[in-house]
Length: 156
Image 1 (cartoon, rainbow, N blue to C red):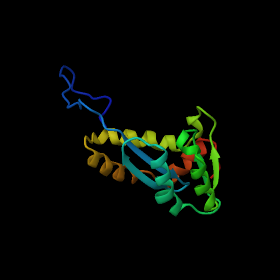
Image 2: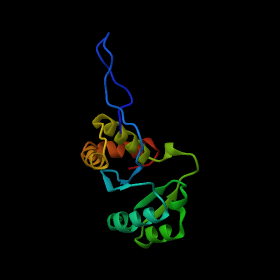
Image 3: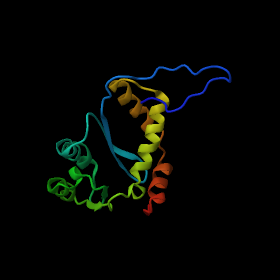
Image 4: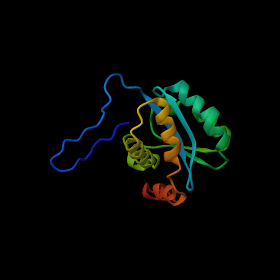
């Protein structure tokens, strides 16, 4: 990801490398707990029903505990019957947000900060972005995670 803005001393032109050409789609999924970011998963490419189900089965289910609440938006791949059954099979509850309400989804605040941190690193390759995500996740404190939940209206 490239920085959106730059600066240079007054009277000097800003010089920076800007990526041109084909963009690669990269998808990052994660779960937000009151004390940490859990179940991070990075794939090269867009998310679809098959890849989301793989994330649920291989990454999210092993960390879910009975009584956990999984909050999902209304993306089509999130609403599949198989995904609902998998999440409920471990005793977790499922909650779907109303349409067009990213302000009620606390993980969106995590993603906003993550994108900001990624732009600062200006990673240009898939491997570099993946490594930068790993380093950026260390920047989230437990207090910050709890604040993201509170600011979206959830009790911690």
